[in-house]
Amino acid sequence: MIIFQLSLQGILTLRACRNFCFLYLLQKSIMTDFMKISDFRALPKSDLHNHCLLGGKRSVIEKHLGRKLSTFKAEQTGIGDLNRWIEREFRPFFQLPDAFEKAVEAAFIQAKFDGITRLEMSIDVLFGTIFNVSAGRIVDVLKKYHHSVAPEIDFCPELGFPRNRSLRTLLAGFEPFPDFQYFQSIDLYDDEFAQPIANFKELYRYAKKLGMKCKAHAGEFGSAESVKEAVEMLELDAVQHGIGAAGSPAVMRWLADHKIPLNVCPTSNIKLKRVRSYKTHPIRILFDHGVKVTINTDDALVFGDGVSEQYLQLLRHGVFTMDELEVIRRNGQPLS
Ligand SMILES: [Zn+2]
Image (cartoon, rainbow, N blue to C red; front, side):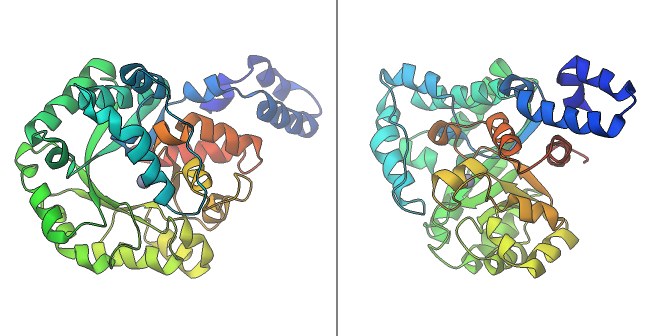
Protein backbone atom coordinates (compact mmCIF):
# COMPACT_ATOMS: atom_id res chain seq x y z
CA MET A 1 0.00 0.00 0.00
CA ILE A 2 1.48 3.28 -1.15
CA ILE A 3 0.57 5.28 1.95
CA PHE A 4 2.35 2.77 4.15
CA GLN A 5 5.43 2.97 1.98
CA LEU A 6 5.44 6.73 2.16
CA SER A 7 5.06 6.96 5.89
CA LEU A 8 7.67 6.24 8.51
CA GLN A 9 9.84 3.41 7.31
CA GLY A 10 10.28 2.12 10.80
CA ILE A 11 6.58 1.41 11.12
CA LEU A 12 6.90 -1.55 8.80
CA THR A 13 9.30 -3.26 11.14
CA LEU A 14 6.59 -3.29 13.81
CA ARG A 15 4.80 -6.00 11.84
CA ALA A 16 7.51 -8.44 12.70
CA CYS A 17 7.06 -8.07 16.41
CA ARG A 18 5.30 -10.58 18.62
CA ASN A 19 2.35 -8.59 19.95
CA PHE A 20 1.00 -7.90 16.49
CA CYS A 21 -2.50 -6.62 17.35
CA PHE A 22 -1.29 -4.04 19.84
CA LEU A 23 1.46 -2.86 17.57
CA TYR A 24 -0.86 -2.71 14.58
CA LEU A 25 -3.13 -0.34 16.49
CA LEU A 26 -0.10 1.65 17.59
CA GLN A 27 1.02 1.84 13.99
CA LYS A 28 -2.35 3.25 12.91
CA SER A 29 -2.27 5.82 15.66
CA ILE A 30 1.26 6.87 14.72
CA MET A 31 0.29 7.18 11.09
CA THR A 32 -2.68 9.38 11.92
CA ASP A 33 -0.55 11.64 14.07
CA PHE A 34 2.47 11.81 11.84
CA MET A 35 1.16 11.87 8.29
CA LYS A 36 2.17 15.21 6.88
CA ILE A 37 0.76 17.28 4.07
CA SER A 38 3.86 16.48 2.01
CA ASP A 39 3.04 12.74 2.29
CA PHE A 40 -0.37 13.34 0.74
CA ARG A 41 1.00 15.66 -1.93
CA ALA A 42 3.36 12.89 -2.99
CA LEU A 43 0.48 10.49 -3.65
CA PRO A 44 -0.94 10.33 -7.17
CA LYS A 45 -4.47 11.72 -6.89
CA SER A 46 -7.36 12.83 -9.04
CA ASP A 47 -9.24 16.11 -9.05
CA LEU A 48 -12.47 15.51 -10.95
CA HIS A 49 -14.34 18.59 -9.79
CA ASN A 50 -12.31 21.69 -10.56
CA HIS A 51 -13.52 25.02 -11.97
CA CYS A 52 -10.29 26.01 -13.69
CA LEU A 53 -10.41 29.81 -13.35
CA LEU A 54 -11.25 29.54 -9.65
CA GLY A 55 -8.73 26.77 -9.08
CA GLY A 56 -5.43 28.56 -9.52
CA LYS A 57 -2.60 28.77 -7.06
CA ARG A 58 -3.35 31.86 -5.04
CA SER A 59 0.22 33.22 -4.93
CA VAL A 60 0.44 33.17 -8.75
CA ILE A 61 -2.84 35.06 -9.11
CA GLU A 62 -1.91 37.55 -6.39
CA LYS A 63 1.46 38.27 -7.98
CA HIS A 64 -0.18 39.06 -11.32
CA LEU A 65 -2.85 41.14 -9.59
CA GLY A 66 -0.28 43.02 -7.50
CA ARG A 67 -2.17 42.59 -4.24
CA LYS A 68 -3.49 39.96 -1.84
CA LEU A 69 -6.95 38.54 -2.29
CA SER A 70 -9.14 38.73 0.79
CA THR A 71 -9.95 35.51 2.62
CA PHE A 72 -13.33 34.15 1.60
CA LYS A 73 -15.87 33.87 4.39
CA ALA A 74 -19.53 33.11 3.79
CA GLU A 75 -22.18 34.68 6.00
CA GLN A 76 -25.01 32.50 4.71
CA THR A 77 -25.49 29.02 3.32
CA GLY A 78 -25.42 28.93 -0.48
CA ILE A 79 -23.36 30.35 -3.32
CA GLY A 80 -24.54 33.98 -3.00
CA ASP A 81 -21.56 35.08 -0.92
CA LEU A 82 -19.19 33.17 -3.22
CA ASN A 83 -20.51 34.97 -6.28
CA ARG A 84 -20.20 38.33 -4.49
CA TRP A 85 -16.58 37.50 -3.52
CA ILE A 86 -15.77 36.61 -7.13
CA GLU A 87 -17.34 39.82 -8.38
CA ARG A 88 -15.54 42.00 -5.80
CA GLU A 89 -12.17 40.27 -5.49
CA PHE A 90 -11.52 38.33 -8.65
CA ARG A 91 -13.26 40.21 -11.45
CA PRO A 92 -10.65 43.04 -11.40
CA PHE A 93 -8.03 40.38 -12.19
CA PHE A 94 -9.73 39.77 -15.54
CA GLN A 95 -9.32 43.43 -16.52
CA LEU A 96 -5.55 42.83 -16.64
CA PRO A 97 -3.68 41.86 -19.81
CA ASP A 98 -3.08 38.10 -20.17
CA ALA A 99 -5.37 37.38 -17.21
CA PHE A 100 -6.92 34.32 -18.86
CA GLU A 101 -3.52 32.81 -19.64
CA LYS A 102 -2.29 33.52 -16.12
CA ALA A 103 -5.40 31.95 -14.55
CA VAL A 104 -5.00 28.77 -16.60
CA GLU A 105 -1.28 28.60 -15.81
CA ALA A 106 -2.07 29.05 -12.09
CA ALA A 107 -4.60 26.20 -12.25
CA PHE A 108 -2.03 23.76 -13.65
CA ILE A 109 0.60 24.98 -11.15
CA GLN A 110 -1.84 24.32 -8.29
CA ALA A 111 -2.75 20.84 -9.61
CA LYS A 112 0.90 19.89 -10.01
CA PHE A 113 1.77 21.23 -6.53
CA ASP A 114 -1.09 19.15 -5.11
CA GLY A 115 0.14 15.93 -6.75
CA ILE A 116 -2.81 15.63 -9.10
CA THR A 117 -2.26 13.01 -11.80
CA ARG A 118 -5.76 13.00 -13.29
CA LEU A 119 -7.54 16.30 -13.76
CA GLU A 120 -11.06 16.97 -15.04
CA MET A 121 -11.13 20.77 -15.16
CA SER A 122 -13.88 22.95 -16.59
CA ILE A 123 -13.94 26.22 -18.49
CA ASP A 124 -17.22 28.10 -18.53
CA VAL A 125 -18.76 27.83 -21.97
CA LEU A 126 -19.71 31.53 -21.85
CA PHE A 127 -16.30 32.77 -20.68
CA GLY A 128 -15.13 33.48 -24.21
CA THR A 129 -18.22 35.50 -25.05
CA ILE A 130 -18.00 37.59 -21.88
CA PHE A 131 -14.27 38.29 -22.08
CA ASN A 132 -13.90 38.26 -25.86
CA VAL A 133 -11.69 35.18 -26.09
CA SER A 134 -12.33 32.83 -29.03
CA ALA A 135 -12.94 29.11 -28.60
CA GLY A 136 -9.72 28.43 -30.52
CA ARG A 137 -7.75 30.63 -28.13
CA ILE A 138 -9.24 28.85 -25.12
CA VAL A 139 -8.19 25.47 -26.53
CA ASP A 140 -4.69 26.78 -27.39
CA VAL A 141 -4.14 28.23 -23.90
CA LEU A 142 -5.27 25.03 -22.15
CA LYS A 143 -2.98 22.95 -24.37
CA LYS A 144 -0.07 25.34 -23.89
CA TYR A 145 -0.12 25.31 -20.08
CA HIS A 146 -0.97 21.64 -19.78
CA HIS A 147 2.14 20.84 -21.81
CA SER A 148 4.44 23.49 -20.36
CA VAL A 149 3.50 23.20 -16.66
CA ALA A 150 2.25 19.67 -16.06
CA PRO A 151 2.50 17.37 -19.09
CA GLU A 152 2.51 14.38 -16.75
CA ILE A 153 -1.08 15.09 -15.71
CA ASP A 154 -3.77 13.07 -17.45
CA PHE A 155 -5.86 16.12 -18.33
CA CYS A 156 -9.50 15.85 -19.40
CA PRO A 157 -10.72 19.29 -20.51
CA GLU A 158 -14.35 19.99 -19.59
CA LEU A 159 -16.96 22.57 -20.59
CA GLY A 160 -19.04 24.11 -17.81
CA PHE A 161 -22.58 25.41 -18.22
CA PRO A 162 -24.13 27.84 -15.71
CA ARG A 163 -27.59 26.71 -14.66
CA ASN A 164 -28.95 30.25 -14.40
CA ARG A 165 -28.73 30.86 -18.15
CA SER A 166 -31.24 29.87 -20.80
CA LEU A 167 -30.83 26.70 -22.82
CA ARG A 168 -30.66 28.82 -25.96
CA THR A 169 -27.75 30.87 -24.60
CA LEU A 170 -25.90 27.75 -23.48
CA LEU A 171 -26.35 25.95 -26.81
CA ALA A 172 -25.08 29.07 -28.60
CA GLY A 173 -22.05 29.17 -26.29
CA PHE A 174 -21.41 25.46 -26.91
CA GLU A 175 -21.57 25.78 -30.68
CA PRO A 176 -17.92 26.66 -31.53
CA PHE A 177 -16.34 23.99 -29.29
CA PRO A 178 -17.20 20.53 -30.73
CA ASP A 179 -15.21 21.20 -33.93
CA PHE A 180 -11.99 21.19 -31.90
CA GLN A 181 -12.71 17.67 -30.59
CA TYR A 182 -10.82 18.67 -27.46
CA PHE A 183 -13.31 18.79 -24.60
CA GLN A 184 -14.25 15.42 -23.15
CA SER A 185 -16.97 16.17 -20.61
CA ILE A 186 -19.59 18.71 -19.57
CA ASP A 187 -20.79 20.01 -16.21
CA LEU A 188 -23.77 22.09 -15.08
CA TYR A 189 -23.25 24.44 -12.13
CA ASP A 190 -23.98 27.72 -10.34
CA ASP A 191 -27.38 28.16 -8.67
CA GLU A 192 -28.79 24.66 -8.23
CA PHE A 193 -32.30 26.04 -7.85
CA ALA A 194 -32.21 28.44 -10.83
CA GLN A 195 -34.43 26.31 -13.08
CA PRO A 196 -35.69 22.72 -13.42
CA ILE A 197 -33.11 20.15 -14.40
CA ALA A 198 -35.40 18.97 -17.21
CA ASN A 199 -34.65 22.21 -19.07
CA PHE A 200 -31.17 20.89 -19.90
CA LYS A 201 -32.16 17.57 -21.43
CA GLU A 202 -31.50 18.74 -24.98
CA LEU A 203 -28.04 20.00 -24.07
CA TYR A 204 -27.08 16.71 -22.41
CA ARG A 205 -28.53 14.61 -25.23
CA TYR A 206 -26.37 16.57 -27.67
CA ALA A 207 -23.22 16.17 -25.52
CA LYS A 208 -23.88 12.43 -25.17
CA LYS A 209 -24.22 12.14 -28.92
CA LEU A 210 -20.78 13.76 -29.21
CA GLY A 211 -19.39 11.07 -26.91
CA MET A 212 -18.80 13.43 -23.98
CA LYS A 213 -18.92 12.36 -20.34
CA CYS A 214 -21.96 13.93 -18.66
CA LYS A 215 -21.64 15.45 -15.19
CA ALA A 216 -23.74 18.02 -13.30
CA HIS A 217 -23.86 19.67 -9.90
CA ALA A 218 -26.74 18.25 -7.89
CA GLY A 219 -27.35 17.81 -4.19
CA GLU A 220 -24.80 20.46 -3.25
CA PHE A 221 -27.58 22.21 -1.37
CA GLY A 222 -30.52 20.19 -2.71
CA SER A 223 -32.15 16.95 -1.62
CA ALA A 224 -31.39 13.30 -2.23
CA GLU A 225 -34.29 13.14 -4.67
CA SER A 226 -32.83 16.02 -6.68
CA VAL A 227 -29.61 14.00 -7.11
CA LYS A 228 -31.51 10.97 -8.43
CA GLU A 229 -33.65 13.16 -10.67
CA ALA A 230 -30.57 14.82 -12.20
CA VAL A 231 -28.91 11.47 -12.90
CA GLU A 232 -32.03 10.02 -14.51
CA MET A 233 -33.06 13.13 -16.42
CA LEU A 234 -29.64 13.97 -17.87
CA GLU A 235 -28.24 10.41 -17.96
CA LEU A 236 -25.28 11.49 -15.87
CA ASP A 237 -22.06 9.52 -15.63
CA ALA A 238 -21.04 11.31 -12.41
CA VAL A 239 -22.45 13.88 -9.98
CA GLN A 240 -20.58 16.93 -8.73
CA HIS A 241 -21.10 17.16 -4.93
CA GLY A 242 -24.25 15.03 -4.56
CA ILE A 243 -23.96 15.09 -0.78
CA GLY A 244 -27.71 15.63 -0.41
CA ALA A 245 -28.02 11.93 -1.28
CA ALA A 246 -26.85 11.10 2.23
CA GLY A 247 -30.36 12.00 3.42
CA SER A 248 -31.88 8.93 1.78
CA PRO A 249 -30.68 5.32 2.17
CA ALA A 250 -32.82 4.41 -0.85
CA VAL A 251 -31.09 7.00 -3.08
CA MET A 252 -27.64 5.98 -1.80
CA ARG A 253 -28.46 2.33 -2.59
CA TRP A 254 -29.64 3.39 -6.03
CA LEU A 255 -26.42 5.37 -6.68
CA ALA A 256 -24.31 2.45 -5.48
CA ASP A 257 -26.27 -0.06 -7.60
CA HIS A 258 -25.94 2.14 -10.69
CA LYS A 259 -22.25 2.85 -9.96
CA ILE A 260 -22.71 6.63 -10.15
CA PRO A 261 -19.71 8.34 -8.50
CA LEU A 262 -20.03 11.52 -6.46
CA ASN A 263 -17.16 14.00 -6.82
CA VAL A 264 -17.30 15.50 -3.34
CA CYS A 265 -15.54 18.69 -2.16
CA PRO A 266 -15.57 18.70 1.67
CA THR A 267 -13.78 22.03 2.19
CA SER A 268 -16.12 23.77 -0.26
CA ASN A 269 -19.16 22.34 1.56
CA ILE A 270 -17.85 23.65 4.87
CA LYS A 271 -16.84 27.07 3.55
CA LEU A 272 -20.26 27.52 1.92
CA LYS A 273 -21.89 26.54 5.21
CA ARG A 274 -23.66 23.49 3.82
CA VAL A 275 -21.80 21.28 6.31
CA ARG A 276 -20.64 22.31 9.77
CA SER A 277 -17.31 20.45 9.97
CA TYR A 278 -15.13 17.68 8.54
CA LYS A 279 -16.20 15.49 11.43
CA THR A 280 -19.89 15.72 10.49
CA HIS A 281 -19.39 15.70 6.72
CA PRO A 282 -21.84 13.27 5.03
CA ILE A 283 -19.07 11.78 2.89
CA ARG A 284 -18.72 9.19 5.67
CA ILE A 285 -22.41 8.18 5.36
CA LEU A 286 -22.12 7.97 1.58
CA PHE A 287 -19.00 5.82 1.84
CA ASP A 288 -20.67 3.50 4.38
CA HIS A 289 -23.60 2.99 2.03
CA GLY A 290 -21.34 1.86 -0.77
CA VAL A 291 -21.50 5.03 -2.87
CA LYS A 292 -18.35 5.62 -4.88
CA VAL A 293 -16.92 8.95 -3.72
CA THR A 294 -13.87 10.99 -4.67
CA ILE A 295 -12.35 14.06 -2.97
CA ASN A 296 -11.87 17.20 -5.05
CA THR A 297 -11.08 20.89 -4.86
CA ASP A 298 -14.04 22.74 -6.45
CA ASP A 299 -12.38 26.20 -6.15
CA ALA A 300 -8.91 25.95 -4.58
CA LEU A 301 -8.22 29.65 -5.20
CA VAL A 302 -11.24 30.64 -3.11
CA PHE A 303 -11.36 27.95 -0.43
CA GLY A 304 -7.63 27.49 -0.02
CA ASP A 305 -7.38 23.70 0.11
CA GLY A 306 -6.04 21.30 -2.46
CA VAL A 307 -7.05 17.63 -2.49
CA SER A 308 -4.07 16.80 -0.24
CA GLU A 309 -5.16 19.16 2.55
CA GLN A 310 -8.61 17.59 2.53
CA TYR A 311 -7.23 14.04 2.82
CA LEU A 312 -5.23 15.20 5.82
CA GLN A 313 -8.23 16.94 7.43
CA LEU A 314 -10.44 13.88 6.99
CA LEU A 315 -7.75 11.69 8.54
CA ARG A 316 -7.04 14.03 11.46
CA HIS A 317 -10.74 14.46 12.26
CA GLY A 318 -11.18 10.70 12.35
CA VAL A 319 -13.59 10.62 9.41
CA PHE A 320 -11.53 8.07 7.47
CA THR A 321 -8.64 5.76 8.20
CA MET A 322 -5.64 5.55 5.92
CA ASP A 323 -7.02 2.35 4.40
CA GLU A 324 -10.32 4.05 3.60
CA LEU A 325 -8.60 7.09 2.11
CA GLU A 326 -6.69 4.69 -0.09
CA VAL A 327 -10.00 3.25 -1.37
CA ILE A 328 -11.22 6.79 -2.11
CA ARG A 329 -7.94 7.72 -3.78
CA ARG A 330 -8.24 4.69 -6.06
CA ASN A 331 -11.84 5.62 -6.91
CA GLY A 332 -10.46 8.58 -8.82
CA GLN A 333 -7.93 6.62 -10.82
CA PRO A 334 -8.72 5.35 -14.31
CA LEU A 335 -9.88 1.72 -14.58
CA SER A 336 -10.55 1.57 -10.87
ZN1 LIG B 1 -18.37 22.94 -8.23
